Length: 441
Ligand SMILES: [Zn+2]
Image (cartoon, rainbow, N blue to C red; front, side, top):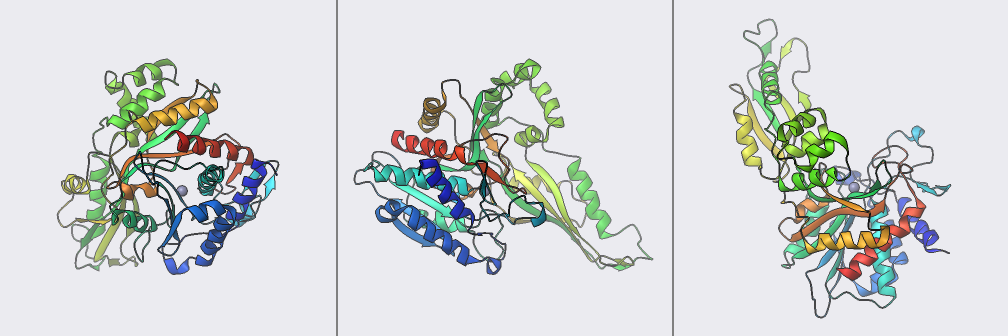
C-alpha cells in the first residue's frame, strides 16, 4: 500500500468512530472514544511504546516523550477527537460515519474538523520515530474530547488536559492546533493562514426582575421593554475600532496578495485608518477583527400573552478582543443599561495574548512551507474569530499556532456542514509538513 492508501485507511477508521460530543456528558457515547483509542494504539504502535500516555477525564489522551537532554522548550501537537452532530441525514450524499472513499474523496463528519489533523500529527510522529529519529526536546500530543461543546456538567476536557501539565510545572514552547490551512488565491498563489490569536468567547446575560402582573395594566411598560431598550442601546454603541498588533500584521500581510485600492489601504492601515474603518463597516469578518463584538442570541420572557413577565433575560455572545477583559466589557455595557436591568457574566474567560509573527518558530513554519511548496508561498498570520482548545493554555504556552498543515481547495466540504469531506491526496503533504517541522524545530 502507498503512504496515501495507508493514511486514508487510518483516517477512515477514525471517522467511523461516532465521537459526537454533547453538552451533557451523560448523552455522549464514550464507547466510541474507546474504539478510537484502540485504533490509535493499533495504527501507531511506536508512539504507543515510546510515549508515556495519560488518560484524562472521560476520553482525553496526553502523550509525552521526554528528551534526555532537551535543547529547546517542549513542542505540543493538539487536536480534538470529538465531532459535531451530523445534521439532517437525508442531505448527506454519503452516510456521515461511512467514511466512504469515492473518486479520491473521503466523506464524513470529522474529516476536516479535525480528525484530519489528529491523523496527520500522529502519522508524522509515528513515521519519524519508526526511523529511529528522536527529538532533542520534549514532545507532547494532546487529544481533547469536548472542543465542540460547552460542557454543562463539569470542566471542559482541554482544561483538564492543560491542568495536568500545569500541576507538573511544564511550560510549552510551541503548540499546533486546528485553525488555518494553505489556500490558493484567485491567481493560484498559495497562502498559508496561520492563526496566532483568537478572540475570547464569553457569554453574558442581561436580565430584569419585577413583580409582573396582568397585561391590562402595563403602566409605563414591561420588563421586556426595558431589556429591549438595553439591547438597542448596546447595539447602537459598538466598541470603537482599534488596531491590535496581530490585526495590523494580518492586514499588512493580506495587502501583499490584494490589488487595487484595497492593496493601498491594507499596506498602511494606520495611514488609511478612516478608509479601513469604512470597509470594516461593510465586512463582518474585518469588523470582528477590529473590536470586541456583541451578538444577542437568546431571549426569555412571559409564556402567556396576558401575563407580564416577572423575569426577562437575554443571552449575549460576546467575542472579546485582546486588550479588553470581562471586567472592562462589563463596565462598558453597564453605562447603557436602563434602571433595573442587570448584567451577569455566564461563562468564558479573558482573551489569551496573541503570539507574534516575529518569533523563530513562526519563521521555521515559513521556511518549512517554502521548502515544501516553493518560495512563492505567502504566510498570513491571523486572528481567529472562533475559539479553539488552545485558549486554556495561556499560562503555560509561548507560541501557539492554529494551523493544520493542509492544502485546502474547493473539493473540501467544510467543517460542521452537511457533506463534510476531504481529498485523500492532501493527507501525505500535511504529514510531511509536521515531519519536517518536528525535525527543524
Ligand atoms: Zn474543531
